Amino acid sequence: MAQQDAFSRLIEALKVLPNVGPKTAQRMAYQLLQNNRDGALFLQQALADALSAVQHCRWCNTLCEGEVCALCSDTHRRSDVLMIVHHPVDVASMEAAHCHDGLYFVLMGMVNPTQGMDLKNIAIAPLVERLKHSHINEIIIATNFTAEGDATAYVLHQLLKDLPYKITRLARGMPLGGELEYVDAGTLAQAVYERRHLNQDN
Ligand SMILES: [Zn+2]
Image (cartoon, rainbow, N blue to C red; front, side):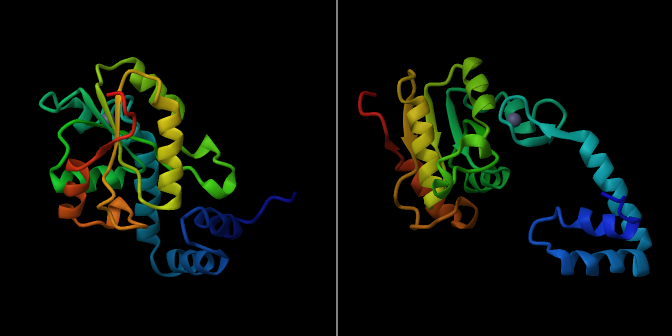
């Protein structure tokens, strides 16, 4: 394949952004090159800096600067309760609701039940590794109340149910189709406080 010219490559690059199709990418490219070259340089530098500085926390898998994130480094938090969420934004929602003082694990995705329950979109291997180095008693599955969230919860439960943890999931007080990110803090806190056991024996 012939090497693309620089302008076409920029359009291709901009299409990696979510919800950006060819037309929008083309508009962005013109905007940057015609009207906002300083902005383009700022974007270039910020992207390069973030790529070299931001990585996955070695404990909770969220994105952070440095090896371990601020939450995992906080020795005042309970280390015996681990809450599993989809995305870093869910950690922010939980923290805003002040309803969980334990640790987190961030899957960075969800299982899609219409695509064969494929696990490639969630960080299973880092989770297994995380559990090897812990003193966790309870695992709270805090996935969304959507088809993907339910599928993810099912997969996690299958993975964890024979291990010696109390497994709980957020209460059904969450609205159906509810994504943690968009649920108000009061409802979220209630769902955590009223979480239900998934394994009966504990
Ligand atoms: Zn962390």
